[in-house]
Length: 219
Ligand code: ADP
Image (cartoon, rainbow, N blue to C red; front, side, top):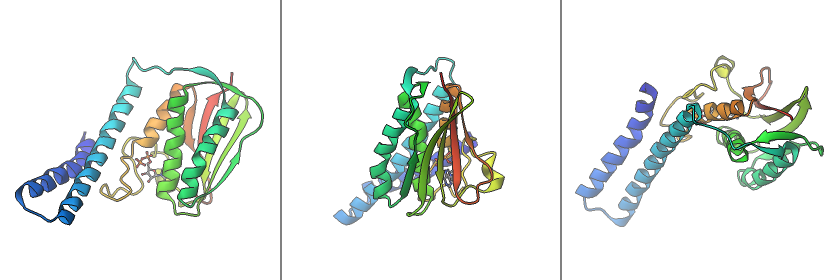
């Protein structure tokens, strides 16, 4: 509750402050536009936090269930990777995909699973400089599908590695920073992976960057 109130306090105070200013003062068009932009950005920030909190509590609720469909994970990940290309290219990121041509069946809620991938790619882009190499690879070991999502960027400090999936944990904890994350994305992603009977982990011992591993049982 302390984390939530802290993270909501800043955008809400800013929205209130700038709205009051707009109501009080007669300003030129440029100033108005600037204040509306600040209000919009802070509303988006507060909204994102509330949506993610709602999502996290939904995943914890006993009524939560996945819409599982038998899916060829290789085909599915290949398609997702294709869809990631424009985003990676427009941000100036390098990419490499190693997805086997085999057909491997898993039970998947594709919309939910997509959230995991989207969170990992958004993080890779948000926290690393342009030019970083993002690699997605898939392998099958002991009836488990392993999807490794790596980057050769700044990495996650070792002392935070074991806590990074806990809600509100961020490496850069300046909560007003431009990067603007709430620290809930990886917690949500991990819960979705676990709801599929798998997991999302951070692999240790990487010299450079980070590797997140999604596991999901093959059927
Ligand atoms: P958010 O991105 O909303 O802050 P996440 O739970 O998705 O929350 O990520 C937690 C933190 O982990 C981020 O704030 C960032 O500091 C760090 N992080 C996540 N992915 C990466 C990455 N690929 N490279 C470097 N740091 C990362």
